[in-house]
Structure formats: structure tokens, C-alpha cells
Length: 509
Image 1 (cartoon, rainbow, N blue to C red):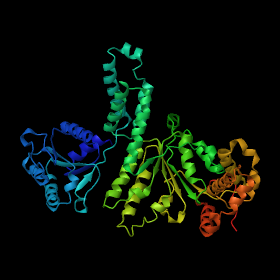
Image 2 (image 1 turned 135 degrees about the vertical axis):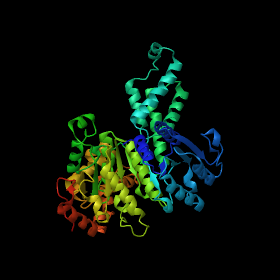
Image 3 (image 1 turned 180 degrees about the vertical axis):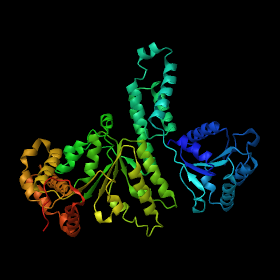
Image 4 (image 1 turned 30 degrees about the vertical axis):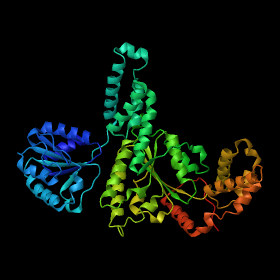
């Protein structure tokens, strides 16, 4: 159900108090106005600075007086909709809360509604049972296309008076260019799209296909401002991952799963992947490679940023995250170390906030229909709630263990190819792999970097012996956390996860 239909139904069902969290105030009010017109209702809009403005007889009423703004509801005839901007700031006031409760009782039997518009959900517990929250989505591709076409038509027709001149001067946007601008703008509000297109017009005098870069930069800034998601550029390729052949084969097989051809074939969108295993074995690298190989934007979620001090704000941030991820779809959502984030999902010690956020996240995972591919990584599988590991949450759960000798050879080759592509054959990779049992991929890379320091300090290139010397100084995680790794391997061997490598890992001593 789209938002306009849902709002129409909610108003007709006489829900007295409605809360719409959105930063797109103007767009929300336009939808409310359209719905009210279809229902034959009058709309009264209030804000703290100017009071009521939309009805001439009540202009200025309630100016700097939120309680007076509510008192007008008693005086206006039935059939009105009262829109209160930023009213969440006053909900903690005892008089405001009491008046809203009284009105909620009264309005149940009347065709009147109060709608609070605020940038985020901020409802005190005393009023949570009285408000109905309606989520207002970011503009979809159709909305953005209408806006881009309208702006392009308006501006470009000003530059050139005739269609012939438009084509002749190269200012007519092609259908492909418009689609590229729309795709780049997904996840942005209409106001942000208008601003960035205005910037492009100010710079060039008209819209061009190259303005995609301006929109992408605006998108990066928008995502940074959420302080929840991070737009993560990725140049990592599947070939940059050493070993993990089962995992790579699984990913390559799904390379076209987000295409229109896959939809026509009947394939559902891939849901996600959980990579569990030992630190430094390439789990995060795999997330970046998936994004690059599938040509999808990579969003990194720091789950710790979802949790806030105010009651209800953490759940609001979770909804904001899911809404933004869906608006940017198709995309890859990378959740690093999900085990640390939801280890306390039993509801103890934080007034149940972790449990509520986890529940909201699980519900979204189960019900999402948009192509958001989740890549979650975990080091401590025992810390994950059982609900997260249930079949259907992810397409597959892979265990990423320590590389065996053959895989270590591949990892050494990948890193040496990166640092010494012209001199790769001078290194005894077979010996390096043999002499570094129980080393993770991260530890292998660190031994090469340390060897480079050795060679650089002596004004020469580093050698195989330098790498082995550096490796001898590293105590691998397999030795310092042997018990935890053995537990992980036993968990994987029990059939609860698919092995990322074709060959079984080497047993620890």
C-alpha cells in the first residue's frame, strides 16, 4: 500500500492522532492536502512561529502557544485535519500531553484528525498508545523521473526556444541520461534533488548527463549526515581474494541476479549472506568485492550508531536506516561485526533497547521486498541470537576459516602482486605458504609489510627471507585464541554453515 492510500484509509478510519516522521515537510503536506481534498476535508496548518496560516479566519491563532493550537480543535466544525509542524518538541509538557489524550477520546467519534510532522520519532511513553505512526517514504524512481523531466524541460526550453534548437545545441537530455540521473538520485529527497540540479544549471546553464557525478556527491553527503550509514567506495575485485573458492563460486553464480532478465525468469532478489569466522580471514574484503563485482553501491552500517540515549530514538534510527537502504536499492548493505552489535539482544541492561532494535531489524529482513543484499560478518557466532541464524534470514551462512597451505599461496601471490608486480617471480611463494601455518590473510599481509620495512631500512628490496623473518615475530591469532577458533570450527563442522573453502582447513595443534 502506498503512503497516500494508507493515509486516506487512516483518516477515514478516524484515527485521532497521527505521527509522520519525515524531513520532507513540504512534500508530506502536499500529499495531506491531496488526500484531504479527495475526502472533502479542510486542512489547518500550524507552526510555533506563525501559528495557524492556512485558514484566513484563524491566521496567527496559537502563535508561540502550542496549547492554544490544540484548543482550536475544539472550536472548529467536524471534517477538519490539523497539521502541527515540529510538535514533537512539546509532547513532554504535562498540559500538552493531557490535552492530546482528551482530544484523542473526543475525536474518535468525529471526522477530525491531528497530524504531527517531525523530522524524527520522538513520542514519550505516556502518549505512545495514542499515536499512529505512518512512515513517509523517500521519492521513488517514478517521482524522481517526473521531477528531473520537469526541471530539464523547463530549463532547456528557456535556453532554446524550439525542439530543433535543443537537439542542435546538445542541451536535450536523452532518455538514457534522464534514467542515469534518476538512478543516481535514488535515496535523496526531492528538495536535495532540486538543489543539486539547480547547482548543475547554475554551472552550465542546462542539465547534462555528466551531472550524475554532482548527484552522487550529494548522495554521499546525505548519507554522511545520517551518521548511520557510510557510502563505501569499493574497487576490490573477486580476484583480490585468495582462496574461499566455494564462496566465490556462489557469488559468481549470482552475478546477474539483480537484472531484469532474472526477474522475467522468476528469480527473487537475493536476500543476503552471513560470513562467520575468524578475524582477518577476508570477510570484510568479500563484502567489498561483492559490491564491485555486482556493480552495486556499498553501504556500510555501523550498528553501534543505531543506539541513542533517548527512548525511542534508536528504533527511529533503525527505521531511517532501512528506509534509506531501500531507497538506494539495488545496493549491498554491509554490516560489520554484527555479533558485537546484537550480543545483548536479550533485553537486559539497556531497558530492552537492543531487543527492540533487533526485533525491528529482523522484521525488516523478513519482510523487505526491495533488492537490498545484506552482507553481515561475525567473529563470535555464539554471541548471535538464534533468530538471526534461522533459515530464511540469509540466503546462505558461510564459515570462513584459516587458509590452508594452498590458499596461503594464493594470498601471498595476491599481496605480492599488489606490492611487487614486476618482481613477483623472485619470491618463493611455496616456501612462504609452508612456513606460515595458522596465519590468517591479514597476518600474511602484515608480514609482507613488515618485510618491506626491513628492506627499506637497509636501502634494498625485501626478500623471501625478510618475509619469513617478519612472520617469525608475529604470534598468529590461531595461537592466542585457539579455544575460540576450535569452537568455531566445531560449529561449522556440525553442518550449521557452509564452508567457504573447498579444501578443509588444517587442524590446530
